[in-house]
Length: 86
Image (cartoon, rainbow, N blue to C red; front, side, top):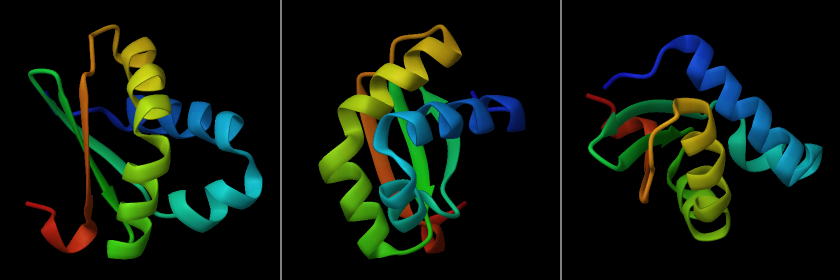
């Protein structure tokens, strides 16, 4: 299921509240919450460094925020650099 723009922005807003302004601006700038395939959420970050930072440090928080917004269980968060967008 492709996420709507509203769902994408809702998850971004929740993450901004959770991680704070500095971390959000550093890691989440340009992030796109794209698709839910089963229980896997695909997320695209601006570059490889940001993707690694988001996945390593905030996967659990993204799982929780996305599950609440989407009203579906998210068990895995795959954060990829934008160069891998389909």
